[in-house]
Length: 139
Image 1 (tube, rainbow, N blue to C red):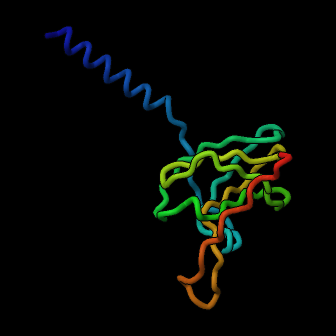
Image 2 (cartoon, rainbow, N blue to C red):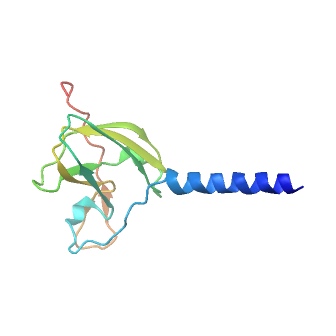
């Protein structure tokens, strides 16, 4: 009996350690000033450590919309304000998004994943932008 309990406790501790060390903690915050409304209400900041022709991200989210593949995604260089033109969608669902994008330089990038075209005279009006163009074939 004691051996069974000991084995059970060990398995529980091992499972807890896997959960604790297997997931990264992402900070959530409110920006000091709001961004342009057309970028939408949701943004992630991606920090790039070194320049690269292509960067892969696997982003967990919970989207309420039925067809996330029909929505535009903007990735903007935070320092220059330039849009990253090459975005390849590896996998996209309501729970997860895997993208490859580039080229990128060192620094922060803003990932806007629910941008919409606001109509300024009505609060809940406007529509989502259609998906971005396919990446450049030479990329």
